[in-house]
Figure (cartoon, each protein chain N blue to C red):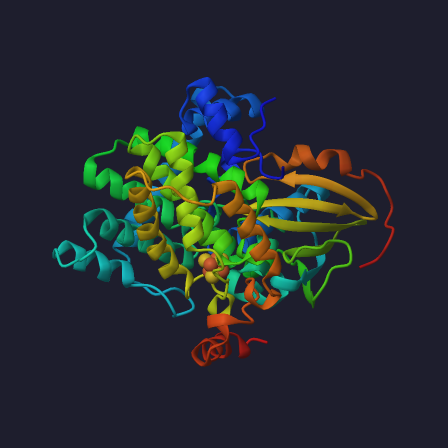
Length: 170
Length: 294
Ligand code: SF4
């Protein structure tokens, strides 16, 4: 049972146009923001399948960058996330693939993000209705449910690495 | 912990506890989340208010979406209805205007409430605010209706899917329409059995609907499918309230929806690689919008 709460169905309150390709993706980005404790200075984003085909129309790129910048699903600034990322000096790059070998779902992304010497690689899937799941953090398979109303800083806490040295470069 | 996994279990639980579906949802939510009922109701009220704001801003906003392929139709529609020209009757024609308003707002990257998704966000507010306008159903009742809708949506989402990418538009507009149909029935005093029956009838009507958004944008055909969804919801609700039954039980309809979705090719599941997205005009729109960028 992936969907638990009435607010997984009625909600999130969000900026459009798509709960799976916009809102759910903001949450994935926001989780990574919490994991790093701040926005990444560099990031490489891979969009798979449906994300790769339709990201422009749904603003999936803006949604992910908005989340990485710490925005929530109902932040009216998401529209301007590309500009905001540039202002912050964030270096970002998008790649597009058909199939993800770790996750069999059309709305999947794998994000590598770097802040100072801290690098994380996070796999996220948007399940629909704004609900998402983190399925991978670095080489570990995990299952962390992200619902827009949750406090992601608490969810990210167990996975935060405090003083670990850089493992892989982007 | 109480887990409701099917419509059959839902009806049984309601009958056993002598509760409506919305009361059942509230009880389950309180148990699962540990929040008290007042807090949960307040959170749901907040969502109803956001829905109302989306309708109110959309209904008078004639601007086009950034894509240039949608916008302005809510204004046209509500003007037409206001002149008393509509053939569909007040309930349906108001619902059509309100759902247009919401879905156009969504396309403009305005704030909406996903019900259950953003693509299908126009249907539930469309029918709810139409009930309010036409028979004075108070906002408090509309909030209850949102609990009914979410219970129905939870069962559908956990047994099947609610996103176009996973199961086609039948999963998105189909689920939202089914939820709305059941919600109308509960707000009009129908039994849990009748609610579920309306849900089944509405879902059957949209079975097989593919997801084929032009240019990958949640605009064409999405916005108008929301509008049509409201009229299907009212028709299904009317049938159920009249005592007409779905010959196929709701759980089996949901299962059929799941199987049809699994059989749907990737091209018809939100990739914008089939259906209307690949018509001549659909392709032109895509080219005009994106090719200059990539
Ligand atoms: S066509 Fe696809 S994107 Fe549009 S409303 Fe239906 S499921 Fe959503």
